[in-house]
Length: 506
Image (cartoon, rainbow, N blue to C red; front, side, top):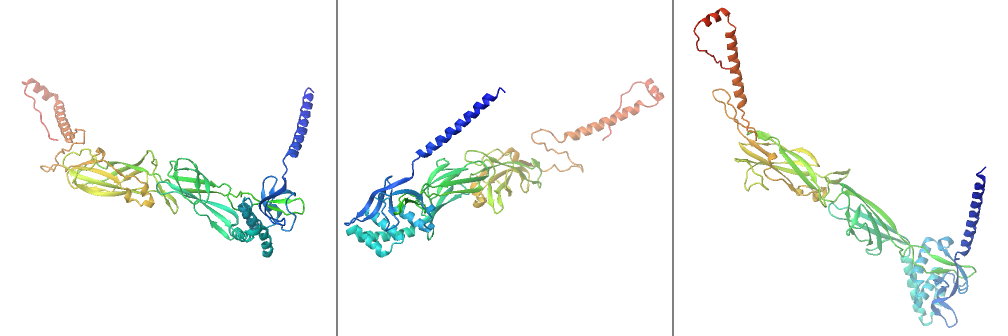
């Protein structure tokens, strides 16, 4: 019960608000400016000696226009209302296109000869016979022939240049390497067919997603029909770019405004600029045009070997980053989509060298080489080269390189940066040594030392021989110890004598 007063107050407030809003709407509706206007006089043109007018008419809002219905009451002093011509249903789209061309091209002119000829051309296209058109041109006095001739030219131009609209098409192209481009083509739908406008016809505003223009901005105004350089952004191997283009108001299309009279007077074709515009967008997907820098770390398959052994090079392929570089392995376009760029690693086995190999930027001039093998790589990962045979004792070392010219430019070669290894990297060195030949029908102990350990391979054999000799000696001692006590006692009664130890060769 305690809530009822508040509920009642709320209801009254809402009702009052509704009434207030209704009154406010009525006031705003009544106070809105009306679209009615009045023809208040003549614009540019000619007044004949007997009082007939040929030219544009003026309205009290400042608009100019050409009459459409010859023979009806002139617009001066008549009330009018603006109407979209499409709502009248008077003309076909092609006829509206011609009238619209006349209105936006000549109806607003301040030149009286142009205004008079434009009025005459409007009547002629509305159906006025040629003889009557010549007669009405006489209102221009001494310039009658000039006005009529210009009217004929205007009508021919209007029929040729009139259009029902304008269209835009965006072209986005991504380059295999370096900047791409965007271009906006404008096509006007003339009555006789479409016309591709020449380069530079109109400015077009373009917004990019996934790329920027040369100055680093994502939006720019470019001339239609001309290429603008774009730079792909992002760090993926596969990139997508979207471009949206729109024009301002262009002088095309069949849209026009007609002043419709409140009485039986002439309707008037109103001069107004066209509001035709075009919008388009396009997407492009392709390989990133950024270059990428392969890097190869290698390791020989055998650090120690003997002549005649087969050795290979193990490759670990990665990609270096950096400004302006793609931080991943690049891709290329194929009929089925995208595939990794394939590169060739050239591996050369240098040697033999008599002395240990020292680190250097490049192999010594004229140094020997065993072979050069090739390995195709298509991304980061592990690879193994074909094998090479060691021909003799000595030191050997691998070097590796990637030459972009070995890759088809259309297959990504233009984006592969060159790479070459140093000479003498420790992990790429192999030492080849012939085993020591056997002596006295028995294999001789090897004198090969393991790399960098100082460990002699003969030590295990010496330890084995010594252990066997000790074992035999202990056996003999144990046998003597276990002889019958009688004999031992007898020996104890004798004078001590020198102990004798017998060695048995293992």
